[in-house]
Amino acid sequence: MTLTTADGLATAPAPRLDWPFLAAAVLATAVLVALVLLDGQVPSAALLVLGFALGAAFLKFEFSFTAAWRRFLVRGEAGGLIGALVLIAVAATVIVPVAALVPGFGGAIAPIGPSLLIGAFVFGIGMQLANGCGSGTLYTAGGGSGRMLIALAFFIAGSVVGSLHLPWLLDLGGIDPVLASAHFGAWGGLAVTLASILAVALLVAFVAARRGASFLPRPALLVGALAIGALAIGVFLAGRHPWSVTFGFTVWGGKIATLVGFDLSAAPFWQWPGPQRALAESVLTDTSSLTDFGMIFGAMAAAALAKPFARTPWPPPGSLLAAAVGGLLMGWGARIGFGCNIGAFLGGVASGSLHGWIWFAAALAGSALGIRFRPLFGLSRE
Amino acid sequence: MRIVYAIVFVAGLAAVVADHLTSPSSGRAVSPEDFAGACAPCGAPCPSAKK
View: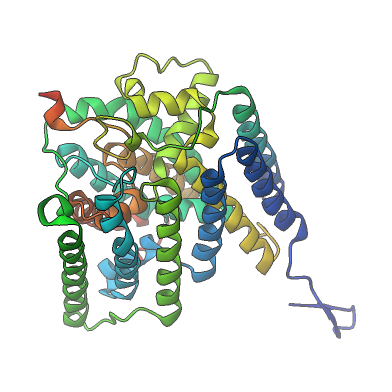
């Protein structure tokens, strides 16, 4: 972009940097890092910085689970989906063995039952309406999309509603988590996990080829997958559990609900030790909140570094309504289905937990339905 | 939209800092999975534990 004079002659290039928002994002991260370091919590500072890098990486590489799934379902193109599987494979190489062998570390596990299936399916519908999943909502909202700010607000609200329904859905039954390393040992579990990722990659490539579509990821997407996979390993090593996004939203929503007068203390979900502690203690002691804050600020910094921040006009009302409905469905679905593309799909599969694949299948089916709903809100199916 | 962003940014950051300064923080950051009996990233119990 260049500035032009009244007679149309080009003069100096317009500034691409948006200093106020860039400085604000960096300063906000520095403030939060300083607060946790004052408490002596180096791993917390690492989670904030890693989240910052993740937000910047997602924005820089335009890494999107939602668009990749939609391209696969609508056109048969599998490159984005295979890029995501590469990311998961990278993370699995560390998560499966370390979670199995090193005390204090653990994988992302979850029970398998109606709750998982229903939650993932509803999440899949929501992600296509909102046009972003958990991580996508964070980095696009942080990156200057007002539409996704609305999706994020409703995501948070939906996850609190989901927290009230989850215990009831768990009562419908299910089986305990199925973990590859529990059956085949640390290294056998890793081999089984990588083999399952390869099998799914070959399957989606086969489907793409049958539909005459491309299945090779763009080189930039592959670089992004490797970078984000390495950062996901960093989050795992700093937090001792795989990266998760949506529990942070539930905690934020729970704190807001409490602040405006709702008493969540009697709700079974908020009596479980983890959520109870998260609600009572500082939000900066919750691992998912730390990476979430970092991601928002990282995406904001990366966006402000590239062009003037948040200069686009608000989208039409139908699109905003889709963001709200999609956010609500994602929030509810993520809480009922034990996470999003990050916590359940990436974290689950990279931990060698069967629930990750079941979540993926159910969310993909939900996405197929969500794509059909998009025209109702004035959105294209693609 | 920039004004909306500026307001949300300042309010959000202020809320996080205020929450941190007014809430207890007992040691390192944790995930709900760190607690005994947790069977999911949100801390839900295992089905076998409920029988």
